[in-house]
Image 1 (cartoon, rainbow, N blue to C red):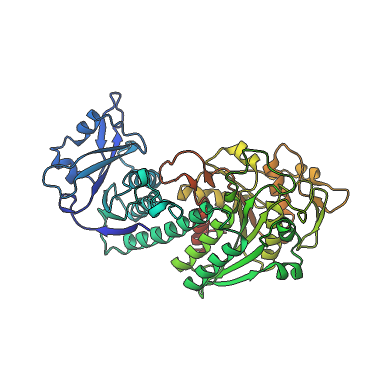
Image 2 (cartoon, rainbow, N blue to C red):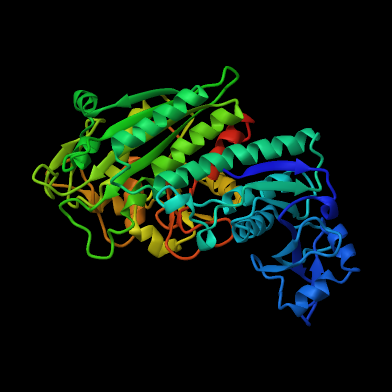
Length: 510
């Protein structure tokens, strides 16, 4: 994992492989003029105040995420200056936004794969900027190299950037120090979620996922309970058992409990953990199976958020539920037309075995409801319909409480995760009427993402506040990396869940 530190050293005298500076498009400029962002004054001075001109000559435009490398000035101990674009220069009375800084730091860290140390001289106006830059750098430096020869998976086979030194902040400043500690904890756990999502399904099944959770729980003082197939059968978890019935790998339900002696509120996070989704008997068509190892991204996000809350010592109780199963076709698999009796006692007619995520979540949501938490949030790569609605970078948020839905969306926006509020229209519920069971697991095709949310709503305890986060789009990036987002598993929703826990601990959420 990339190390993150604060440094008081001046850029010219710092021993590093590169100095990272920001460059922006000059405000009200029609000629493409550039400006060097605050934080890089010493570097610009070494170019006799002409760094922006040199970068423009080299073709830099200042566009967000654009990276330009040039030789460092004479007398610098670092051989390279890396300029990263920040987009448009902000108004005179404002500063660069935290998400802009986060993305720029991520792009720079990724471009510096193979380097041992880089100094980031980006605009540091306050502790929030320190945290954003640190978080972006740690997330941007991520590479999944467990299955690469010699453990190298960076650009051109290079290892990730090993150390990031942030310039411009005081290491002894309590707020800045706390920002670095938070960025480190959240980023390390988010990257662990990415690792889980990227792990091939032949190595990550419900049992091995549960073992990872057990090890982390022991390390960070989190109470854990793992229900195996026998315990699930005894407890009547028909949804989880039904989905996992066709696999040689038995399902699991994992409960992670982080508690604080100062907590006044309790949050429950529930994650869909389908370690591989073939569609079951309703087999997915060709071209839709290759990335289905990512169907446990919701459980990975919940796991990471609970551990991050423990590492940060948040004054809120957080319970994480990981509903783990592998959805495979076999002679023992659940068939279309089968009826499952869920943990809540409701019966569900399975019309499509590829609508399995809602079945495992239904059991976990019903169980989580028994603890009467102040709010429940489930996270899942649930529907292709949500991808069609919102694209590959935005997740949808539904809820049984408009104010809570707004709070989730605002928390996501605050940490830089694009989201959008979605409705739960009552008229769509009729499409799930079943002549055989209490409810069917499928409804109208149009608005399928909303139908899935309405199905889950049926399993929430009476009077409880709940939100559903469908991360089917942003959970797995099949295109090229951008900002601090790599190709493959992204760790979507981890930061939103952590922020919800922080706001609840402060009493600022409900």
